[in-house]
Amino acid sequence: MKRTILFVFTTLCLVANVAASQFKVMVFSKTDGWHHKSINAGVTAIEKLSKRHFFDMDWEEDASRINDKNLEQYDAVIFLNTTGNILNDEQQAAFERFIKGGKGFIGIHSASDTEYDWPWYTKMVGRTFVIHPTNQTARVSVLDRKFPGTETLPDSFLWTDEWYQFGPELSKDLHYILSVDEKTYEPKADWGRVKGEGMGEFHPISWYQFYDGGRSFYTNLGHMREGWQDALFMKHLYGGIYWAATGKGMLK
Image 1 (cartoon, rainbow, N blue to C red):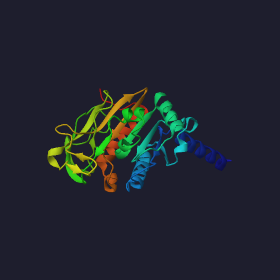
Image 2: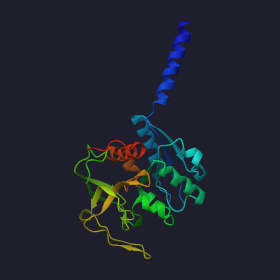
Image 3: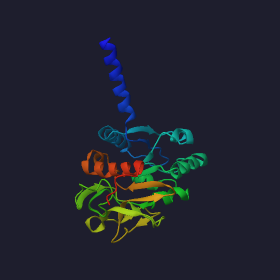
Image 4: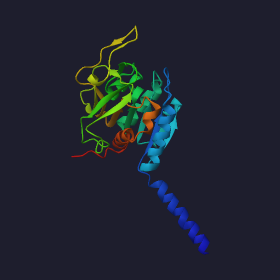
């Protein structure tokens, strides 16, 4: 009898713990073009974040999972180093309804090199990728201390990554979180068909916005596998995930 009671109590505790997860996200990493070698490292790092911060996650590369019924279970979707045209018209419509229903989007690195022909998406991301120079070390500065995940970041710090040059703002509602100092690296790039001179004095690399009923967070960081093991990046990224999924965490 005692063993039965103990078993039932333990089972109830386990069920309660599962039910008490803060939120649930989909990590979506389909590519139609360049495939980042850091994707697996990103999935592993986000899985560790989910255990550390008690939320649930699924990893998907099958675009058919972007449908109304399946998306119902998620609070946010993370586009992890996606590239190119990855969703058909029906899937795009389902994702738009997901965001309009008050849910969240997290774009990591080449999420800004995705779906150029889908204006709703590019406006949600905020800016699109143009070109990048070779991987380099540069100085990053924190622009907004109110956004979650910035609380313990230094005012500025050295970081090595693939620094994107972005096109103009596609949304007037972007709030910038991080920027990179072009004086600390060489921003020029020449790919023949496209050239880049950098973005000048103001070169944002992370931002957020309230968008079409939901929330959108983007970060340029995440190109290199090694960066996914760095505590600074994980704090920055989790702040974005937490805010996009819950709408919480902003300092007043």
